[in-house]
Length: 356
Ligand code: MRU
Image (cartoon, rainbow, N blue to C red; front, side):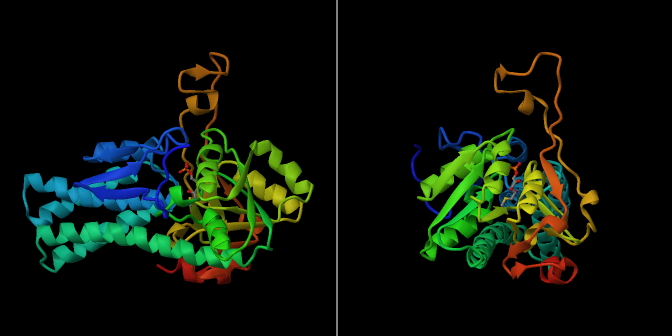
């Protein structure tokens, strides 16, 4: 086991004018950090999944803007010119991963703040400090929202509940507390016993590596299963609820999340098990009407064909590697949000989280 982290986890922090990430590519074997003192290093950290999970990517991007502002000042301190450089940096950060809407939400929030302060005549120092404070605020707000939604979600569970989850929607994927796993942590804080089955989550094993690591770290009973074993657990009546996170929930409630979520929702529906999506308002996208409009990240086929230097598929064979899939809203029992538990019809109930 690695050393213990404080909780909520310090997933993205700022130290010595650098953005510091827990390097999630190394977990659970090693707890180590990536220090990003320039934008290319931070972008690589996002693309490599050193920092991953929709809310955590948003926090990293917000700190990326503070970093970009600081670095741009080597070319001069004119706030109007710096704002142009900040917008260029935001475009570079926005190109790292296409699916999680929190990335674009955080970049819009930071650039809008800087534009307002430039218009108000603030100087470069004041705007740089404000961008840093905004990034910290985004992280702290996320923790607070996750605690609130965690308590709302915990009320849905019976005592001694068994929950099935997919990917990692925990502290590591957020400002530090977790969305789907936040429900588990809140239930524990409320004195409830909860047991978790964690899909391993092919191909990059966020479930087996990260969900299992953080739940065990927090003293939660966790069992890893192959993604393909979930249907049988559901059929056997061994699961009280499925809870996942989301990368983007669009206006009609269609939900993009880690590939494998859609089949899990179909199976939960087939076996009459509630399928909950836990997500803060920053994960909701009011500008996209339905799931067909969500861009799904396609990743390197090598992630499916092998691992590091080991290739298990035959040479000459390729793979398809969509990182996410879209679960139709009709399969979602309810969204667990900081505005409470939102049930169908989603056209009415999602209004508070779609308001920007
Ligand atoms: O590719 P990843 O690891 O960034 O995918 C993460 C997920 O799919 C999570 O379930 C989602 O971002 C919700 S995190 C609270």
